[in-house]
Amino acid sequence: MNLLLKEFKKFSRENWWVYLLFFWALWVVAYTWNWNLIEIILLFIANFFANICVMAMQDSFSEKNPKIGTLYQVLGTWIFLILGIYGLIYLGQSQYILWQIAYILSAVKTYFYFNKNVDLKLINAKLLSLLNIIFFVIFYIYFANWNIAYLIQAIWFWFSSTWFVVLDDKKRYFTILIWTWLIIIGSLFITYNSFKVWNLDWIALGYFILSGTVGIYFLKLLKKYT
Image 1 (cartoon, rainbow, N blue to C red):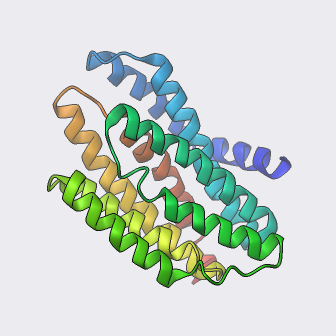
Image 2: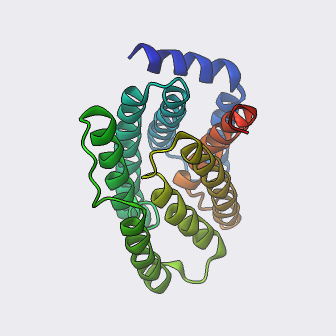
């Protein structure tokens, strides 16, 4: 709890501009005639804390405290799962929920390894690669509709969920760094395209704003891992 509070304060101090973007998002809601204040606030807060969990996780791993790091990984995974369920039910978007199976398996793997001294060898990169190939085919055939932005997000989910199961901290760092910038790019395209038709995609907007802060945060750690 203390580390989470520390990360919250650190996040707010170093990324104060994200709050300005939040109010900008509220203005966009009104401007596009899709005013739903409660929805945007709840989505923003959920995404906000999920991304704090990602940063707290990496802080814990970099400080050689993987037990705490895996707890943040589990917590962040469940928050993203809730967002994925929301996206599927209310927005009809499967890319946020389809790959959560792989993320949950990765979180289970690292939690048991670092907290219970149990190596679940069945959950490995090969298994997740196979699952992700299946997920990608399902997504591409039934949901992608040749939309390049959604395909970028799908590729991001594919690679990030596969490498999250890797226990090496350096590989984990570079994986998060790469997939974060992929989701920023994909979410930016989705946000822009939805804005053009006056029907802003709030989950994509939240991912774009908050993943952007995570991307900057991880770039600051680049020297430490190179």
